[in-house]
Image (cartoon, rainbow, N blue to C red; front, top):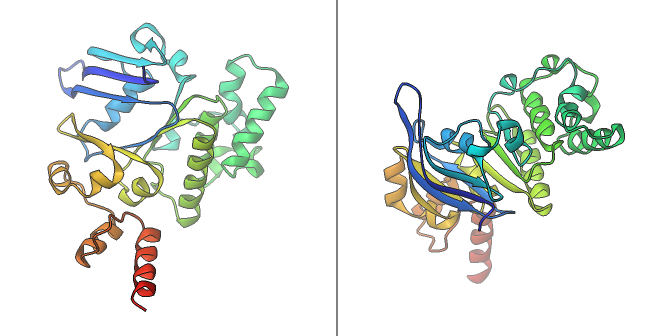
Length: 272
């Protein structure tokens, strides 16, 4: 059995609006997966079902053999951490240390273990010099890393990043990529929902595409971004490097700037 199993899941709000419609997918431990789709496709609801913020109206979400219907959100959050798109929806402590330490403290860990987790997460997220600061005195882009650190300090098996690149400059984007690589190396499962196709292509191996509240395609990133029918159905665009490679009639499948440059350089040397 996969670590995450989503089985024929539907979710409807109390007013009857159906947000996801019989979706199915499974995710193994250690995978990196991007869930893509336009607003209203159902991707945000899908990931909130994974960490117990929502419970399925029908069907089952199973995390590590545990059906989320039978557990509280707090219990599931120890296995599946969710980093909100807007850090202000998540931050509530008076300083950065307490914000990051909140989860470990509630796990009744020792002071030494709490400090170790805070220091690890803060250093990885490059906020270790801000521990005594009030989070709301810190720029928005850095607040996003504080909320990420607070989730990492809990040490969940699965980390969900909701639009992590929003509001980030090149330095922030590079840091997010570095963090994802470290987490994957540690055997964590990393999921994202994003509108940033370049980010998805550069950092995630597998793509789940949603449209009209359903999963329309689930495959590796090269198959997804070279499937014209899928992109049209989901109203998505391929990464810029992919579009340029197609315009230049490059036969090799290319997704990233590095791949594009490598292909061009290789072509120059092959033609000498």
